[in-house]
Amino acid sequence: MEPTRKNDAGKPRFSLMPLDCVEEVLRVLTFGAAEYGAQNWRSDIGTSRHYATRNRFIDAAFRHFCAAAPEPISDNVQDEGFDKDSGLHHLAHAIVNLMFVHTYDIHNPNTGMKKHERTIR
Image (cartoon, rainbow, N blue to C red; front, top):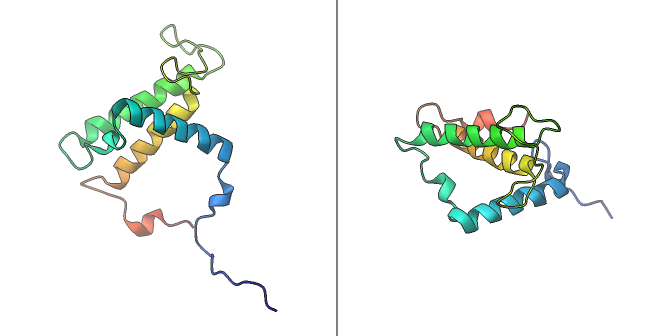
């Protein structure tokens, strides 16, 4: 009997994702859905607020990234490790915000990424 054939060449390999990190990211998304609504973060895609909202996500990602630093980056950023509101790791929050930024870039009304630009090489 021949082994099962599957034509997976060029397709994303989801098995490469570190599932322990993905679970924490999903916890952040779940927290955000309860706090703001499940897809609220998408509301400004393609609107006049597109760029302002994208930049707010960049700002939030950077704040969470700085808060996760082992030593305070400035007097305004404390090394908390975990977000005081959600109790979840700051880096998971940063990842979520960067995913939002990337989604806004994909759906940029002026230069949106074309499908061929998103394929895995």
